[in-house]
Image 1 (cartoon, rainbow, N blue to C red):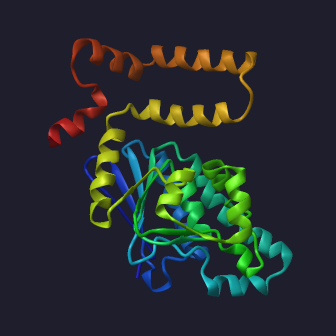
Image 2: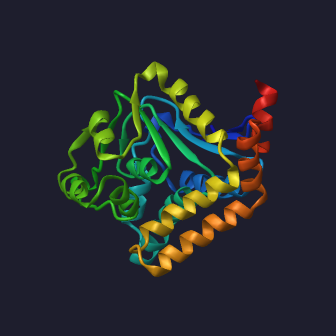
Length: 266
């Protein structure tokens, strides 16, 4: 059985589906490697517009596979660091992917599964979904995923949920910013399609640069260098082929060129 399914439709929407329902879509080194490679490859593919991360079964992801963790406990510190870097690279591949990323969370996300949710651009959860940073209950810490979770929910909430391992319901995850929306289970795919439609309406190069812009403004205070950099970035966009096409389309009341595939389908 393939642990990670991949499809790409005619719109350029790629879907990565974790397919290990027998272990609640927990990830081991093989699935981590597959996810890393897929996000890097799809992120570099000019035909791909959006990447959706989903899973089969009742759980979105239980985090680290227990059998894999048991093996790691017998490894040397050096081997453990090497292994942990694999997980770190996976999270970074998702976070730094230049394409818009969307997670459809149909069930529980525990441990590293919360990291997957935090690393994507947009996450929609079905209302029965639960979230738990359970590491301290195992004598561990959510180290590799912590930058993404901290960015999503803030340091104060991290202090609580890292230390208590309390379970968050979907409404709490929405309030804290871990997920963008909460919907009924039978409307999760429909809600995802609505977000995908919005994403496909944007200029693909502009979206990649918008993601890079977020990282820039997160990185430091608003001072002279930041002001100069942001001014140069919008100037470059205005002068770009995509920017000129987008502005021209708006003024001429036509659709921009990057929506041509959608127009044909409609």
